[in-house]
Image (cartoon, rainbow, N blue to C red; front, side, top):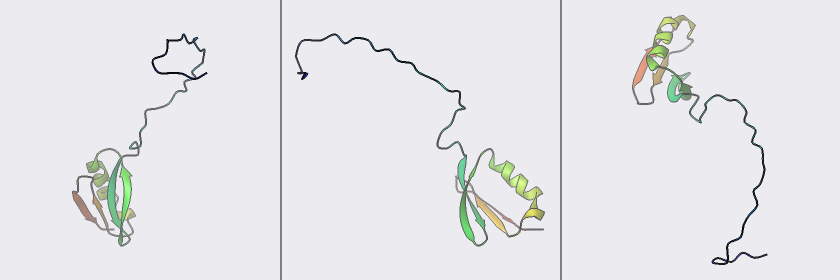
Amino acid sequence: MVRVIGDAPTTVPASIFNVTSFPKTPSSFASGGRPIMLFADGAWWTARQSGNIQDLVAFLCSNLESLENVLFLQSPSGAKYGPYTPQ
């Protein structure tokens, strides 16, 4: 049967279907955090950081002994932090 625009209307019977919904947490492509740049081992690296950038800076400052090389970081807005030097 060929439908023709402007032809007489036809009644379409209702369809029965089931929808299954599974529980999930909210997510998006950016759920991994905001992109930041890290300078380590002589090269710039991209990473994702969630939470406050000041919390990351405080963590780095309190854990300088665990660093092996000098580290710089750049926030998504372009602010530069560092150098963080191993102790």
